Image (cartoon, rainbow, N blue to C red; front, side):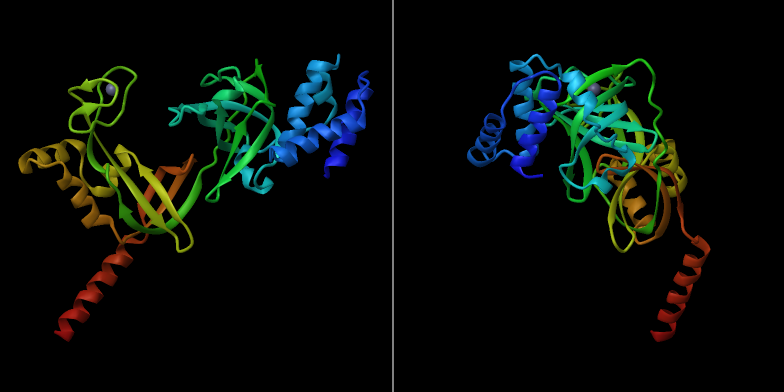
Length: 316
Ligand SMILES: [Zn+2]
């Protein structure tokens, strides 16, 4: 919509609810925001609406109650594109540590269609969302970064706590491709043993609790390439034990014998890089957490390797 059309809509909506505002006034406010302050039109509309809620007797609830906002499907945010405004009816699945002071809250929410990452700006001063609780988030906006979709809460967002629990649908995806990399932080790792802390230790230290005993764990942070996309995939302890054919206690013994924990990730690399795998994984933010992983057609690969070796032997 154009600035004029947006202004007309605002005037009509407010005046239908008993306000007496004028087109020229609304339009000049929008023009100032868009042209002088380079605010995107949709944000300018939200900003002017917020001003008008202060200045007129129109209540925010009844105003937005009228304009039928679309309920965004968390599992399919990509279908809306970037900067699309709508509502979200979600359960908070997980909250993450914000990596910037500008971010008030960041985490994962879900509805029946799947999950999505959300960010709430600190300056928007919104009510704090709690893990496991369900909310109606009105007036949120989608965001695209490197092909990954999330959404943002902002100053125009209304947060309503819901008494009912929004079910979070399973959104696991299948990835079939080649394991092309095993990244730092893979293999035998130690996690902080303090209650409610499972941060991985660096040189025996937790970033929160300092030097701690720690508990051994094993994982693979891998990259799987299906020929079109490279997926970051995290494989947890049990699946890593299965895939690597080595238990955590065996890995611990090997690491102690060689005085080096790196030896385990080296072993995993030697065994797994270049192999085709089939993964069922849940997308969490920019990464995928494996629920199932297996080597695709291992016997076929063994055959291929044997044939390759035989050919090499013939040639030499
Ligand atoms: Zn800790």
